[in-house]
Length: 232
Picture 1 (cartoon, helix red, strand yellow):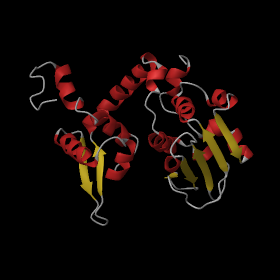
Picture 2 (cartoon, rainbow, N blue to C red):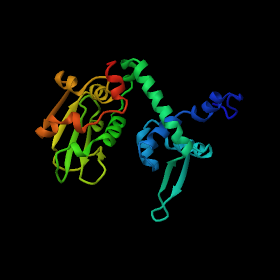
Picture 3 (cartoon, helix red, strand yellow):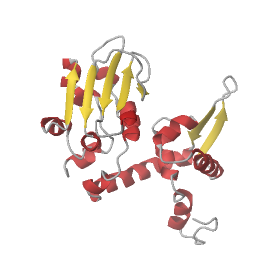
């Protein structure tokens, strides 16, 4: 979009000038989900180059959608959404709900990304629903992907954020989840159910029996899932 925008006084046109630049709403959504540092935010938008992301964050700051703070103790830069951005959150979420209701599931699942799926799954894990242990390790395996993209490990420790590793952390694994990427994405998005994908043997669970039996409890699905389950 050109810098001139639509050159209209219409409020819808003005809103589009703020939100239409590519990636803007996805960056906001990632920050609303809790990411504040550059590398954290980037993991939620893996298709975006670092250069473009830096440019877009500067533009969003200039438009008053976010603020940038430097931690003088560590030198780290943190990004926070502003009040006017917070007013947009229910609007953007409603747009996602509209897409779930009206865009065909096959179109939604046309472009799959294991890294993005795992990053989003990580933050939705309900730690309180996982059997208590000093450390719980869950390995996800996607056999159809290239060898260096097949494996992901979720590490759950009491009182700490769930950690995601794409290289073997060297811990004993409590539960192995082997899945077709499309099947697990569909189940997490609420386009199908975990139960049906497991019954169809597109997802298999091996290991800790209680972890396997309670997967529908601790693997909390996308916030859009309840909206689209009935349609599915």
